[in-house]
Length: 175
Image 1 (cartoon, one colour):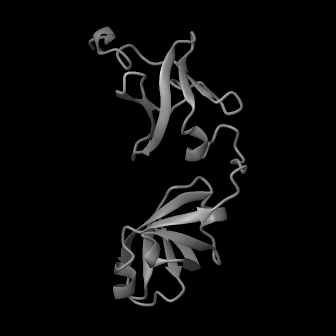
Image 2 (spheres, one colour; image 1 turned 90 degrees about the horizontal axis):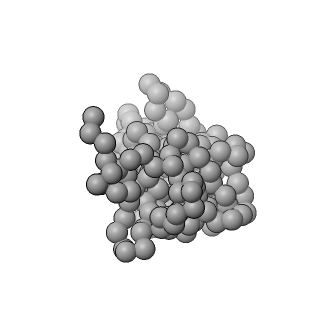
């Protein structure tokens, strides 16, 4: 199974270092020296991490064979993809890989069917579960414990406690 672990950003300096937007909770495992990563688009890889360091709160990576700013700039916006065992789970029981959440049935705490997770959207402030409703419409559920108190992988369902108005605009409360 393939897992997107980062997106390459801007070049940093003139020796080929690149900033990366980390998309994994396990960067030390997925983005360490020697890691070989597939890419999207595929013709830009595979890439082997030579070194990594944190600079001003951003992760900088240097890949084998990328030794100047021009070569680094050509990799901008490339997704880095790690190959993982599909049965592998994060160490923290409260964390999940996107592929574990997609296709889960979504129900409210009182058992009312809401729909099925079609995607996990990663936004700067939080992650969202994109849920397709039976009528074909979509609703986005903030993936925080207040609104998604239970994820049952064995039962293939996520239980939600949506605030008024999230599922039905007519039930929204005015502030």
